[in-house]
Figure (cartoon, rainbow, N blue to C red):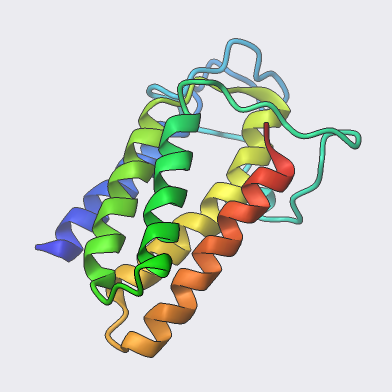
Length: 156
């Protein structure tokens, strides 16, 4: 059941961040995540090093920020309280990520930069969800905490 839910959420994530055929690979103006198909570029291209926007933080739309902050709060609370229920944490993080993606109306370079952070972050949550070794799960949770630190270093 959890695997089915994760596959469904992953499909929604990929589907929600696609372009319609009417957008060229170089024209992202008016880009809206609903029903798009990112033709012309792959998510692998975006998985390069995350950098600042000409020395400044990238701007993230206000609707998305609460879900990032809630996910970070979940991870920090988990660590601070020395919790052991990492599967529950993974489920809660997946929900925050789902809401984050659902609320995305970003486009252009800031959208692409966010994907450079989000895709590895989603992979960490996926890995946490499927992990069976508690000590490895703790390492993944620390990586998630670092992921949120990277988000704050790179995004406003």
